[in-house]
Image (cartoon, rainbow, N blue to C red):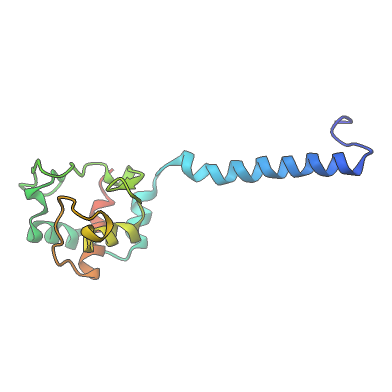
Length: 140
């Protein structure tokens, strides 16, 4: 320990600065390293949506025509990506961090996020998007 504490204030402050940098960097990386550990139910609750209403809306809007969606009857589409374990994914549409707000943005207006992509604007309201997102966040 004697080697760590220096009589020279300049060297001591550099060491302290490096130590702080590494500690802070480690904490900054921790959420990324954890990925999505247990976050889906927290995100579903945080977005204020109703997962049960979300299933009904997914059926109403015909999302299963294009997507395979676990827990939704006849949702076995092969056009868009399967939505199993979407709660654990880091990105939505390869562009947005997977957060409740971004999921709602994507559901409401996917063409604004990635113009020309295969997902059409379905006229989904803010409230409906929250309910659909709440269900999708149950898919781990």
